[in-house]
Amino acid sequence: MAVTSSPLPTLPAVPDPATERILAGGLLPELAYAFGGPFHFLLPEAFDANLRAMRDALDAAGVDGFVYFAKKANKAAVFVERAAAGGAGVDVASAPELREALGHGVRGEHLAVTGPAKDPALLHLAVQHGALIAVDSLDELDSLVAAALTGRARPARVLLRCLPGTQPHSRFGLDEHELDTALERCVRAGDSVRMEGFAFHLSGYALQPRADLAARLAELCLKARVQGLEASRISIGGGLPVSYTDADSWHTFLAGHHSRHYHAGKAFSTGDFYPYHSPVAGAAALAALLATRPAGRGEPLSEILRDAGVLLLLEPGRALLHQAGATVFRIQGVKERAGYRLLTVDGTSLSLSEQWFNSEYLPDPVLLPQEPDGPQGSYPASVGAATCLESDMLTWRKVDFRHRPRTGDLLVYPNTAGYQMDSNESPFHDLPLPPKVVVDRTDRPRPRWRLDRHFS
Ligand SMILES: *Cc1c(COP(=O)(O)O)cnc(C)c1O
Image 1: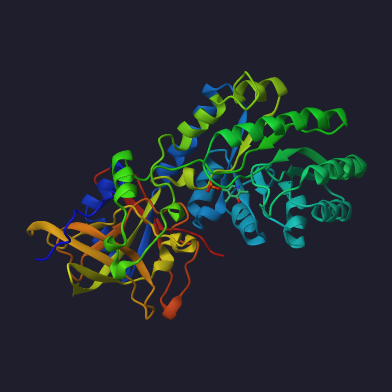
Image 2 (image 1 turned 90 degrees about the horizontal axis):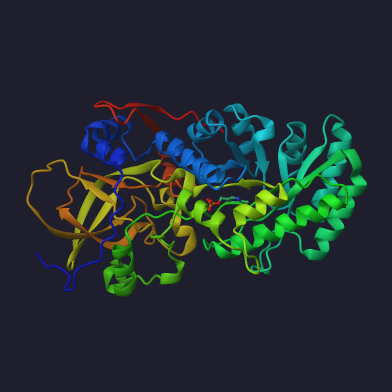
């Protein structure tokens, strides 16, 4: 068999015992047979563990904090249920997300509402339920004051979202001048608004700019209190990084990255890839952030927050979903090309949403052959969708499989719960959306499963 001359880079997923037990057990072929199409499986125990680890990081740094799960990262109901059960809140950005969160047990006051120029119906619901609203513009603040006045029941709880100095072209947030105006309007609004503090959400994953801006927002709280406002908390948004693969594999990949490693010589620019390896990730990145000294300050962020009496809010999406699920396709056909194979699976690339970013999801898919005892070798293959679009590829990259992929084998994309599963899914070609299967008790010989209860 012809093999490409230089070895293909591999990007093995970081080991995860729960996922590995499920891959090794017989559950996935059974479910694939039952559903007759692709599906996602969800591991809520990983979500619980990630949430606990973030809480522990806050405790260890002596910082009062509150975690909101950023719901847009996965539509499943189970993660909202686990957030509620674990005493976390949920960050929503639409009326349907808010309804889902309430309906799955999150208390209104544990909701955070973010996003630009929010739908009036969403603002109304948020005020009625006592949710915390990150105000993105002056006219939004004005509508909120109006909504709070008409509702008469409760004041609007607001944070003012800041336009970050380091990302001046962001379309989100209030600039310095608008912030001053907003503060005056909050003072004038009296009892109809509770100005609880400030918020930001930065693109990228660097810690220093987050520490700098958090310290700046803590200072803004102190100033706002002088104006008689509550200003008791700041939200640092999301963006805790996730590490999908080990440092060596990632750096080898980046160094050797070449279009001949892809079907049709496809060229991706390296800068568009998610950073699939991070030296510190998840709760460890939160701990590192709290230990970071903001520019011009001698003390770490944790101390600044404590001294200012500021509650730290965070809205992680991806980092709470690390290892909380995977996506399973069945190989529907195998075709030979020069030096590699083209696999066609029974779903579409819309179930792996990285395509939004001129990029693809890089962690190696795992082949579950029907005949695991077959001969081993080097079997490079790219993965296409069961659709009529040339560009509908799940993996352009030639993945070096150890077994020869055959029709009927399963292909599992690991660690897809954060954003990959359902951000883009649509019933293209009238194909049904892949169901989500919640799997728990993964430490037992027979884990339990059920369908997720998301209904919107
Ligand atoms: C998307 C988003 C988040 C979550 O970001 P992650 O990178 O998934 O942690 C949090 N807050 C806001 C305002 C967002 O838009």
